[in-house]
Image 1 (cartoon, rainbow, N blue to C red):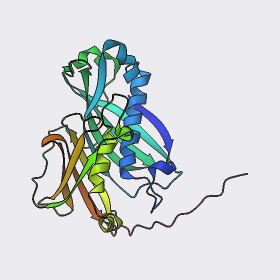
Image 2: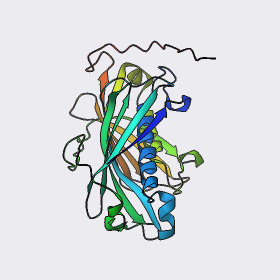
Image 3: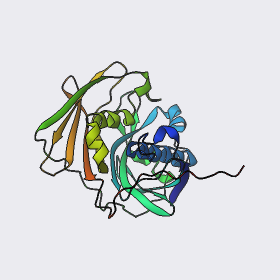
Image 4: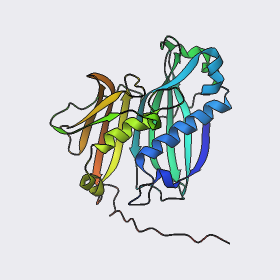
Length: 263
């Protein structure tokens, strides 16, 4: 069974230079859709609070299929549970606008005991979901990160209140923002994000100082981003990019067409 929810691209989620949905914001729509889906099953974060359980995402994998929608466009997120193991719940998804998919991927989720921070067996909620055996990126296999080569940039960031989520740890979006911040303005001007993989290794909290180092890999325009705290791995991110005259089969045109609203 698939869950579907529609959103409009709002000002805060668009690229201010090109008026299109930011790839990072697409991931936040996915997380919101997953939370809404869990809410329909009475296993959202607030439903599990009384059981001392919390949801934690372990991995996100997203591939962009075409240029992204403009500001104010309506997009649709379809998300479904594709596999449940002893400790993991996999959700696959597809995003579309104008009835055409523009991104797809999968994610891996855990339930943790909020006190011990230890994983809890999925059988406590598994019967709430119906498995839809449709895999957007094929079989759920361990993602192999490309080996780091030359360091190309490095930044430090002290977590502030805007980074913190309702679990009182750093929001996933903040890590991706940090990785994106290591790319130069010229690089982002001339490239589009083709895919992103993120693996979360450990939580970080308010006032923690994070280091993000970005490295080239053996694959052209594929980068490895290592986010650490005091040398300890917090998360690993891998991004792949294409030129704006690109593999989508067109030269990207960012002219904005403003639609007149009926008065």
